[in-house]
Image (cartoon, rainbow, N blue to C red; front, side):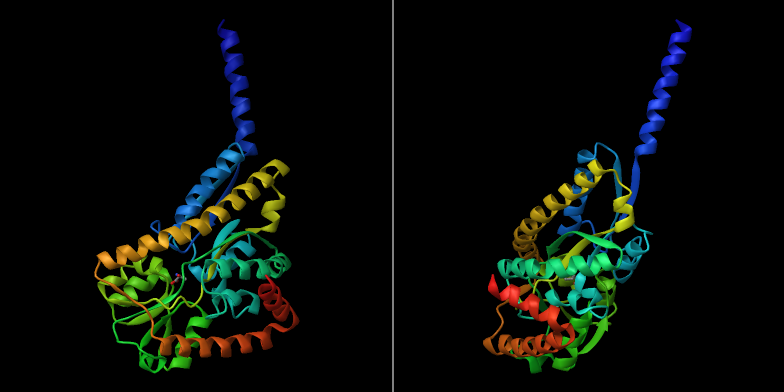
Length: 324
Ligand code: PCA
């Protein structure tokens, strides 16, 4: 009896150690806080991967730039310090024009147009990431971008002299073109930049206004709906290839589900974020025709510059977008 029991314990221990060996652990850095819909979506994604892979792939989510700062995440995934990570594509506009496309003002406004732009951009994005040892798992749009400022803004000349927080090369360029002073600050440091008066305005979504409690400092949101930048979840190729085929499939499936859920969540929660801003004393203002026109002229100019930089691939993406 005693012997039987110890034999049983022995085989159990063996089974456990086999399971432990078969289990892979990945780190997933994100630059946004728990209240953010991208992070809510990632939280569900991580659980789905666990279930679909039958516990073989365990992903630890590190939110709010706690593991890497926003601009460092792509390199961390490329170097396999993090096996999977979430990046804001337009953050990397200076590396390659492909990353800039969904950050351009008034090229694609609204969720439908933005999803079409994504379809046109996707094959090129996949190719570019692949060439650098990464793969694209999924991408989800932020809500439409508007202007947070206390000043009355009726036309772009009213933006002159603003201390403007930029989150990407494109948002810094917009500041230059309207005569504002750009300071690059990532979302994780935005609340502090507002509190210390380093900045007094910025362009982003209601979602970021809510996450950073911008309403404590800024009382107006000009709802220009200028563009919808995307976050992408990318994976180190070698780490992916090291998974067994069933786990690879589980990851891809969870990614596809996260993409679908994320686009819906972005849209649904945008309404909620705007209500929360209003509850906290922020006024949402419809932009004047002059302001919209001024920003579209800037958008047109930036698209022309982009097409020059992006060459034949760029033209192919714009053509594919317009054909849909
Ligand atoms: N929020 C992010 C990027 C786009 C957005 O809506 C930010 O402001 O950093």
